[in-house]
Image (cartoon, rainbow, N blue to C red; front, side, top):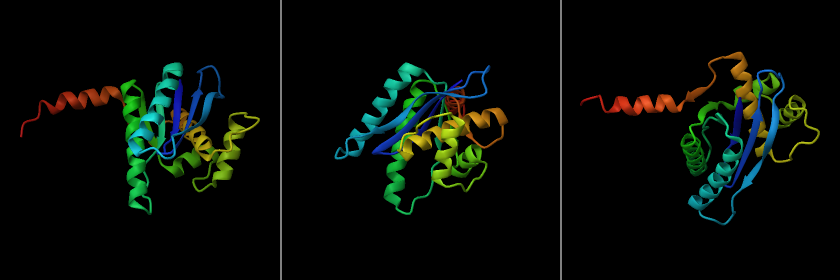
Length: 184
């Protein structure tokens, strides 16, 4: 099972590709990091850049799953709207490659990684490093968060709780077909 964890942003997006073989208990980090869009570019161009960079990596690794943090309510409505654009662009990119999408709440990610839904970012980073046997970890919280999100996905696959809202390409196709059958 290969999962792409994403911490979306319109300027900086964290990503992590984790491979979890059925014969191994410990997932393997294939690649992780941060995609930084050109700072001064307009939003559509930044999103195009981020999605292009993700597509390049998706072409290499071919993940079956994308895990992302659920939307949250920001204090600033503009921030929430811009983040929504980034999330939507990333989701559309994943669906073009028939990648299943799962979303997790911030507290469920922290709980899956640390055992505590209220854990600090520092504690999450420390546990990510420990759980993935990383000697060093990228200082970027976006990259660390992406690793944590991918780990939460793998944890939830093992535990099978109903913490994620999953949208599979098959379900989307069924919904599209059923729309044509309903009459007003």
